[in-house]
Length: 187
Image 1 (spheres, rainbow, N blue to C red):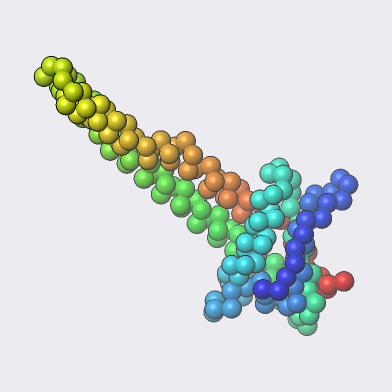
Image 2: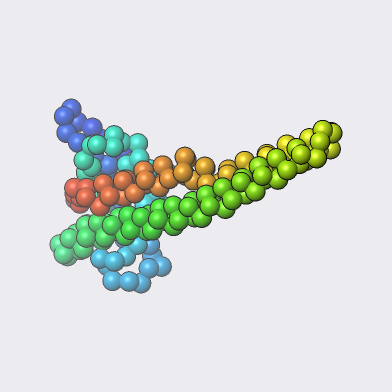
């Protein structure tokens, strides 16, 4: 994709993500044969737009300004392009929501497994303590306790860290689906 982008900020206006293209077709995946309003954005175009949106303040409304060198003759194509962009980011929001739910489901299952492992390993470690002192007993006892806490690693990782990036991506896609979209001739 031969394009440039920048964020333009005027004094008190919302940030504008400007994308300059030779042709509107550069926005869309060329292998996607679905009708125009349902077409997927080109991976490079999506990365370009989302990358700029990620850098902007989370509470600011967005404007996506697309400037095209070779404007289409049919004005309906501009409306279709705007609808396709909105549809794509609505779709991406739904995909991220599904990923988020699946991750939390995995987290709950991982938590059950981790707590079960931790309970069993601590119980086994306490039983080992009853066999009396000894280096081998101490090593096994400590290994059981460490192993139990290691089993808790994944659920803790999910519930403490993994959900933040998905939540942020979802918010950016929601903002882009609601962005003001301006399509015009390149200057």
